[in-house]
Image (cartoon, rainbow, N blue to C red; front, side, top):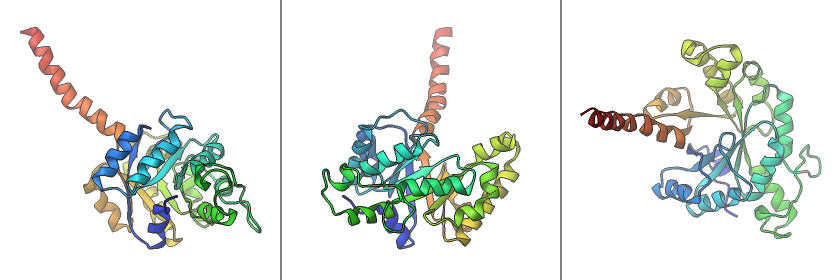
Length: 266
């Protein structure tokens, strides 16, 4: 198995750049890897359709292009899918919708190994991650599980209130603020409360950095990064596959639709 690229970058205090894919097709993962621009790909499983045969194929395509992998999971069923993703070779799990420290501790324990003196629950399931049937020593598997990078979305009002304790929990490697869910949890439309959610985001970033946790930020364009770099952020997710496609469909697509409609009128 490949070295965990995300963990290696965290250990060496190096920045990380990713992008988000909705497609399970390895073709698109290879296309991202061929650019040489990204350290890892995030698969947004919380949004997209997939099955468990897709997971190792996405990872293989990433590995062949020297990229790491992250999977973003629904809250319900997170333990089951997270362990299947790790078995397939995913190097990082992004957990969503946690609101209190106990939920975070439980999710950490679902990925950390069940071994002497630990609070982890993950065993030694035969699968790709261990090379098939009992291929690597159990303690090598323990190391791999401890290397899995765990990222938690801080996207509810309660989670922001608990950010200090969440960032103090061993095993929390990254956090990411979610403005849409945060505003929704406050009963707001995002566009009407930009200053308020920006303040909450800054609080989360500053708290994470103070606790040695890496804040990760999603951005639409490279220009957006400057604001976060000044706050001390060095981990970015640039762009989203579906968002880029929709921008084209609603932009050039709408322009072309108007041209075609004008031909009808003529």
